[in-house]
Amino acid sequence: MDGTSVTRAVSRRRMLWVAGGGASALALGVAGCSEQDDADEDPTASASATMDGATPAPSTTPVSSRWPEPEEIRSRDGVLGVTLRMAPAMVPFEGGTRWALTVNGTTPGPTLRVRPGDVMKIRLENELGHSTNLHTHGLHVSPEGNADNPFIEIADGEAFDYEIPIPETQRPGLNWYHPHFHHHVAEQLYSGYYGAIIVEGEDDDDLGERVERLLTLNDTTIGQAEDAVMMVTAMMQREGREGDTLLVNGAREPGIEARAGTLEHWRIVNASASRFYRLALEGHEFAQIGSDAGRLAAPVMRDEIVMVPGERVEVLVRPSKTGTFALETLPISRGTMGMGMGGGGGIGTTATTRLATFEVTDGPGGEAKLPARTGTLESLRDRSPVKTRQLTFEMAGMSFVIDGKAFDGERIDQAVNFGTVEDWVITNTSPMDHPFHLHVWAFQVMEQSAGEPGVGWKDVVNVPAGGWVRIRIPFTGLAGKTVYHCHILDHEDLGMMAVVEVT
Ligand code: C2O
Ligand code: CU
Ligand code: CU
Image: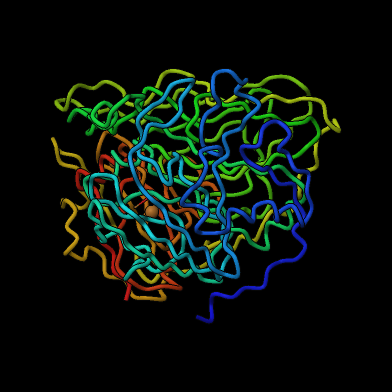
């Protein structure tokens, strides 16, 4: 295949965090440091992946000395070849264990690191005990055949060979993988089946020297068996299940060790089934440099960042003083069930919860400089849509529907002409928020009922209770049939999903 060979940027100037190697694992590297990851590139090595990268620290070690960065698997010569084995397992947790669905023995699964033009050859071995499949959320890749096809079913005990070519036009940033087998998405993600996909690109060169970290935010139930973790009441499903324990890369309140005067680059994904986060870092501002599906042109300073399920952000953090600071999620509401549907009680959280501890020790000091330019961002403001569609997210009793209909994979709900730009106005008539997500084609938010939309490429946007958003979507690059849905995955499983076909 022609598109699979890429010329790699030779001058990758950066500091690289090497996961799982203890406190001294901070490799201050230039160029050659990537060599240290080479062991991870061997697809056969991944099957016997060590648990090191993704497991929480044993209780005998201070949690802070071991940031639980998942293992990384990189593409080599344009190909990322890997076997991902999905299976339940007891994973280490705070000196004991917990039951989880794992990817090659860990949760989250390994981080896949690719470049535009690469092809991902993923063999999925399903030993979950249930049917499943794989979705590469955020990648601008084909939704057909054995690529990012959400209609595939891989039965328990079976294996499937995905082949997913990533176009040269894929923007750099953070994407992620999770299951997408209808009616079972929420429970499988909640139980631990998720992992990150990092796309590197030319824009990375502008960021300069920095420590890179992945933060996957997930909430779950800590339990010793499948039933204890997966079991859910009809009420919890309607609200969207939220777990009692908040995990960052599978660990509770891990420590991030940083040095004053250095630049930290965090890629954050909300990999929770339903929970919304409102992130704040004590004593620090976030410099946001990326949204779901691409980089911003320049950093945008933020005290807080709201993340609904499926959303990603990339931020730079500049520790300048030594000390210990909490990374927290602040109270956030996501509506109510409405009257006659179990009461008018609020959904969301009224508590502040610590997600991680930011431990800043002595370093070069001062405040690291922010890059002036962080990427290329073409605005869609001046493009004119050929068509405007109206979509409505509704709840009535037990039914969660879009335009009055529950999901049916055989029905085409939106037929779109390939190559055109459309506006979709999504209205939410229900008393609960619903985060809208579209596969394959990223969009920009033009207008919304609640305040000014931010800038940047998105593939998830929250549609607040009783509110609306207007998004602009270029249906370019790839054709095919796929889905759009509420990313509160219980709602998706209950039917709040529909089919778009681009031809
Ligand atoms: Cu993360 Cu269909 O989505
Ligand atoms: Cu998706
Ligand atoms: Cu929803």
